[in-house]
Each structure stands twice: as C-alpha cells, then as structure tokens.
Image 1 (cartoon, one colour):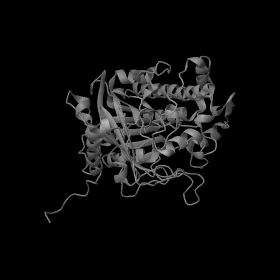
Image 2 (spheres, rainbow, N blue to C red):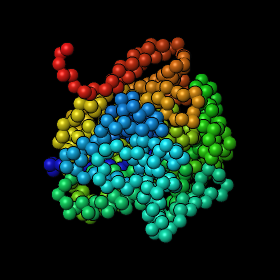
Image 3 (cartoon, rainbow, N blue to C red):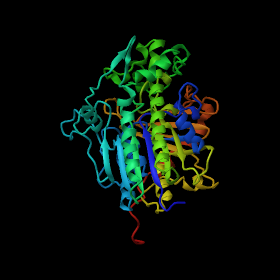
Image 4 (tube, rainbow, N blue to C red):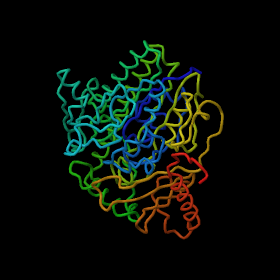
Length: 480
C-alpha cells in the first residue's frame, strides 16, 4: 500500500440511495458511478446521522454525532473547538481542497448578522472554491463569479405545465460541472507535488430547486408515463405526528416549495424526472474526475469515495424534500469506496454503517491514529480484507432541525435489520416499523399491543445509543 493515499471525496447534496443503477434504479443512466461500485465496495445500508444538511455534514466531517458537535440543525454554526478530519490530515502534510458546499455553519444570504458567505473554522482546506448553491447571492460564491468571468448569465425557465421544476443551465455551465472542473484542475496540478492530497467535491445537486439541464431532462420527459408515481398510500399519515400531515399539505408553509396535495400525476412525474436527471449529470461529473485521475497516473494512488449528506423524500409518504423525518428515503444514502488493487473489489454488503464512520476510516487509511474524540467506527479493516464489520443498529437525531417548523421537534431514531423506532420527545408519540413485513414504513406499530416487547427492547437500544453520544474527549488525567 502507498504510504499515504490521496483521497477524492465526492459528496452530493440530498441524494437518496436508490438513485443509481448499482442500487437498482433502472431509469437513471449512471455508468461511471456503477463502474466505481464494481471496482470497490458498495454499502447497501449506509445511513446519515441527520436528515438535513448542516448537522449531517458536521457529523461526518468530525466523526462525531450531531449532539456531540452541538450542531443540532440547519442554522446552527459549528463551534471553533470542533476539528474536521481535513484539518487533522492537513496537520499531517495533506493538501486539502474543496469545490462546492461546505455547510457546517449557516450560509443564509438574508441574515444580517452573518457574513456574505459561510463562517469557517480552521477547517484545513488550503484550496477553497466555495459555492453553497447555484444562486447564492454572496460575492464569495465562486461559481457565480466564474459565470461572470465567462460572460454567461445564470438563467432558468419553468417546465411547461409544472410550476415546481425549472430547466437549468446548460451542462457545461452547471454548478455540478463547475465543481468537477475545479477538482480536475486540482488533480492535474497535484501530480507535480510530492504531498498527498484530499479533495472534497460537493455539488449542490440533486438538491431542490429541481433544475436539471434541458438535454438531461428531455430523455425522461419523452417517456414521462413510464416514471412511477411517489410511494404514498392515502391515510398512511393518520397515525403519525401532525407535522407530517402539515408537510404533506403545505410543504412547511414556505412559498415556492412543493405541496403534495396540490399536484397532479404529471407534476409528480416531472419533479422525479428532474431529480433523476440531475443524478445523471452527477454521473458525468464522476466520470470526468476518474478520467482525470487515470490521465495523470494517480488512480492507483487514490482512494475514491462517493456518498451524499442525506436523502430526499421525493413525494414518498406524501412529502417532498426533507425535515425531521427518519424514513429510509430521508436517511439512507449511497456509499461507494474504490481503490483498485488496494481494497476489496466487487463487494456488496448489507451491514449497517453510518456516515460518522468516514472520518475514522480516513485516519486509518492514511496510517494515522484515530483520535479519541471520534465516535464512528473505522471501516478500513473491512475494506482491506475479509474482517467482519457488524453494527447492531444505526442511530440518527433531529434536535431543532429546521427553523421554519413549529412545534420544534426533538426526535431520535434507532434502526436494526428488522425494525425502526422513532421517539418524538416531549410528546407521547413515536413510530415503530416492522421492516421485514412493512419495508415501505406505512404502518406505525407504536401503539400495537403485539409489538409491546419489541418497542420496549428498542427503547432500551435507543437509550444506549443516546448514551454513546457523550463526548469521549478529553482523556481522563487521573483516578480522582
């Protein structure tokens, strides 16, 4: 194994697990990502620690749970005393770069008490090509500055007959392509240096607003009736918390988003088409990056990771977008790891893994000690040989996730191979799903007498997992 591998870390935004060919989607065209899966390890049961951006990203960048990082929801700011894995690697000689989002602190252009950009801690990124999203008004938005330099105006237009989807920029001027181009330049220059590198490619796609390029969207529009409608059964929200039904009816009461109940079948299909089209565009970007590694002779020295920060409901359960929901579509994400010749190839696993495992895995992969402060488990032994990796459950949190939703919800989740339990704290409500009989999470068994023992056992497991979020640092200095 090379002394210290390069790391190409591709993290999309709001991409659920079933949006790739390798995860069973027969509609999308993702040959480059599918090839990446074939050349490495595909984790079929990878879960985010939060169903929204900021707490999830703070968690997997530090290797610590959201409660521990104190980044509970969107709008929170990561404390200065948290340490990103990129900072740890930079301290050991890595050159770290980023294109696209970081989003471990607010990036809200209308906040008068925030800078026009995103507050940074000492994150270790020497090359910081920041673009929070496509239209962010900050002059620090490198993507918008690049468009200005190219003499190109950012323009979109509505898809005919659907007020919820726009046709986006041409592929060559799309933010996803820009992110890949910045990474490509970094890779080409890095070949001339002896230092190992880590590069974070963080495009905004396939996050809403849904703005796929016309040339990518049209393929789906030509076969629109073949696209399945969202997986929703009338009445399935009746035994769930009231904010589930509120989001079903009015999409958080925010103007311009996607109220399920106002949409017809054609509009549902067009939204799904745009989302999938953006995933196709992401695949082209991944192909571009892998080609850059091969062209510069760095593929054999580079660990490539593909994942996303959380999922997208996409109309399933009668809800679009995201929020304090722990459905599979919200939390389960793709996770692919490839390094031909150095890690296992052509492996698929159904073991439960968490995104909080990534930071300790990177430390392990680079030959560094995993810091005591990290709470995830390194996947490196599993990746490099046939060492078993087994976790009995995955855990996620929702503490004041979104500032526009009332009442403020404090919820936690634990999921095993067979069951999922969600506890809505401060209320007498919860959710319990028998995943073996009800993989679509339609029937809430929380109050079902037949599941009393299962609920009690899972509440104990949840309590133990919550206890595990106690900060393991600093070290004890003496017996008393």
